[in-house]
Length: 134
Image 1 (tube, rainbow, N blue to C red):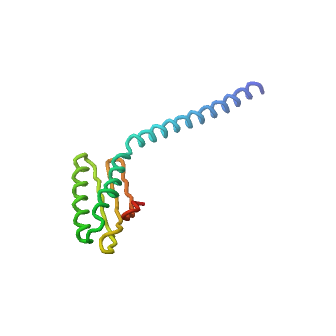
Image 2 (image 1 turned 120 degrees about the horizontal axis):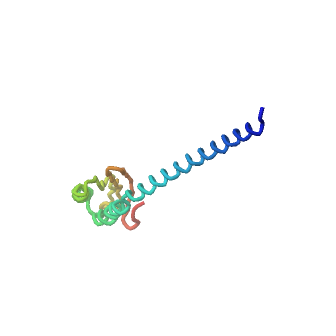
Image 3 (image 1 turned 120 degrees about the vertical axis):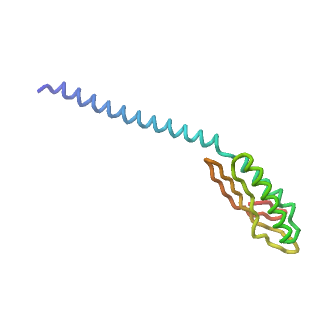
């Protein structure tokens, strides 16, 4: 009967729907930003960097030893790392494996493990004397 009133109601419903959709998108972006910032604050980049340094520099000093001696000393380093990280309430470990001998250990593989309440990080590196770890 009154077409102007009907058009006004339809137009207001369309505008209200668009505003509701925009507010939902805005709320999702805010929540995603908060989660991302929390993850960045919690991610233990320094602790992981320390584990990589131990894997590269700490175990590299044992290159040239026999395989048995290399594994024995690498196991001692691993025990020390686990003990230090457990004092912080997290699990950290540096595990050497697959050492290749040629008159003494020249290359070895290392598994880095870091586990805390919110972060689980594992990485495998291949390290060779004189070339570093990749």
